Amino acid sequence: MSVTPLPKPQRRPPAGEPMSQTEELHVVLKGITRVFGGRKRETQIHALGPLDLELRRGEFFSVVGPSGCGKSTLLDVVAGLAPPTTGQASFEGRAVTGVPDGIGVVFQEDASFPWLTVRDNVAFGLRRAGVDAAEIARRVDYAIGFMGLREFAGALPPQLSGGMRQRVCIARTLVLQPRLILLDEPFGALDQQTRLLMGDELLRLWRETNATVLLITHSLDEAAMLADRVGVMSARPGVFIDFVETGWPRDRDSRVIATPEFGAINARLWEKLRVESLKHMGVH
Amino acid sequence: MPREAWIRLAVIVAAVAALELLCRGGAIRHTAIIPPSEMAQALWRILRAGTFNADIVTTFRDIALAAAISIGLGFALGVGIHAWPDLRLGLEPMLASYYAVPTFILYPVFIILFGVGSGAITAVAVMLAIVAMITATLNGLDRIPSALRRTARVMRMGPLSTALRISLPAALPYLFTGMKLSVAYAVIGVIASEFILSGSGIGYSIAYAYNNFDNQTMYGLMLLVILAVVVINTGLHMVDRRLNARRGR
Image (cartoon, rainbow over all chains, first blue to last red; front, top):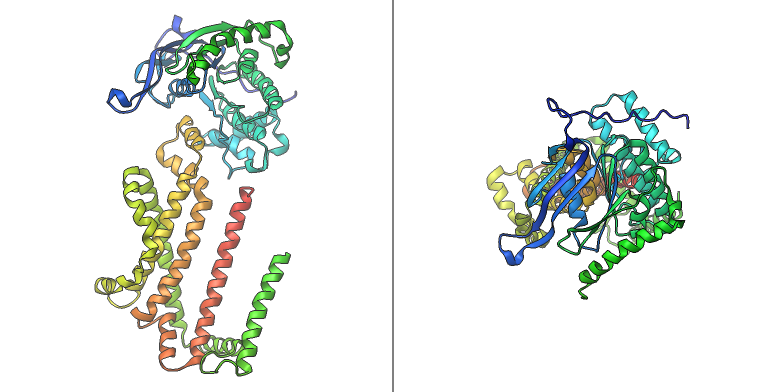
């Protein structure tokens, strides 16, 4: 490709502090719980935790778990969209209070802006940040090319398929150069083949940006295929009951699904997850 | 022009032609309804003579003012109510049944407050039109997908920025429906009020002509109102179509 790649994000320590051991840990969650509902114990819903999690910088981490186990709540806590009831979440060594700088989120539902063209959608965040026009044009052009949207740059999202709209959302996130990318079942609304191909795109994106990726999915295949490490969550209240290292090389793609290792990983994930799913369905 | 437009035009032409024939043929008394061609001639004379120019200006000025206030204030109130769910729950039944109440019965109150004239008329028209805009605003804000709001939060946008750059464009098609309704109610409110509340304006002039058995003037002015409403609504419809086309609907 003759397109100029985005500059790699620089690692900078927080002002005045030396690079410490915790810098290598990009995201740290300790004793996180999230409880919904009023003060009365009877009406409270214990959605999540207590759980601990550490993500290494540049890691591709996936979370699988039964429905309702609190996966999306976990994402909200990491992204700073919701405060934990107890516990501490930190990103790049600093406590998370509100949405920190350097985070991008892709949701399951289509979050593209239907009144803006693809190009304007992708440029939205950059324009707000006051980046100069030439730089915006360069970055947007690159992101659109990278996500295969060049043909549709002038189209409006309602004119595109679900898969294309998700690519717009991913391009919009990519262009802001996030250091942590959170994805909440981003391919849930897509068909199987599109999901596999989008998985490959996601891996390309990950390698290109060197970002840390947290992918939430209910698909064991997807988690096993894409991630360096998979966290298995229990039924509600969700806690991590297993971490599985996949051991894939960095330059992997969807063709790993043909390997025996993939089968073994899947089997291990399901062994733990099956019990939790039955609990969720009320069968013991 | 597409087929539906031809059919529509044919229906209108047929209805007008039928009325013309019935009037000319004597089936409808001349003192009751004058033929459409005479209405058009009367309107032409009125416009050329300019006798009612001041009234026409007064009426359209009041309509524009009532529409603007209803839309602006209605939108602001809608946003406020939407942000306060408890208040909304309390107000919802009242908003839902608002149009069952004939708002015109409040006109004595407005006469006391504003005196006879444009003030009272505009007030009645606003009372009529504002709830349509409030309801449309609530509906539009409801329809904003939560994924868009969450995206705004992830982009660290403040409440004002989110409102102007995300909520407003997202809700615009629904808001526009409210605007169309508000304009329609403003027209109805102003002209109907002028019958009873005013000493000037098209509505007053129609009532005056009626009281003086001046069919020509009366029907000429009625035709003017009909034509004005058609033009206004066609314009709004075209804007609406363009808004929806941008959304790919």
